[in-house]
Length: 160
Image 1 (cartoon, rainbow, N blue to C red):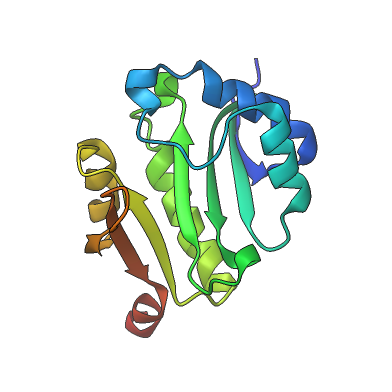
Image 2: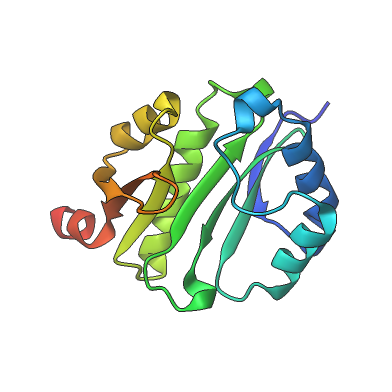
């Protein structure tokens, strides 16, 4: 079996695998993650219509085991929103923090000043990852009540 870790841009042909990945997660595990509908048609449309937004797949041994995204650029935002889901089976292997580090690099190379993410206040494991990666709490959504975090790319660049 191929046991390589590969992270690459998702293609339209990956829509079925991404839909399957999202749909098979137990509700108790993935209930905080709801950026879009998980059906194949919706995901195909997102992957087909993207221009600057980024959707990356995390593959282990050829199997899609997670993905992360940086979106908002296509709708005119200069600060992208980061989102991630790693299959529950692969939780705890450091794939979410790895995706976050890659997202920072992608943002830096695209000259984004910051990265934003939103997290449910009850999602303690995600908050711990984000805070360890030096994301700073910046308030709460008026609708939905999610906590908003930022990572300042420009500030990190200045420290380097």
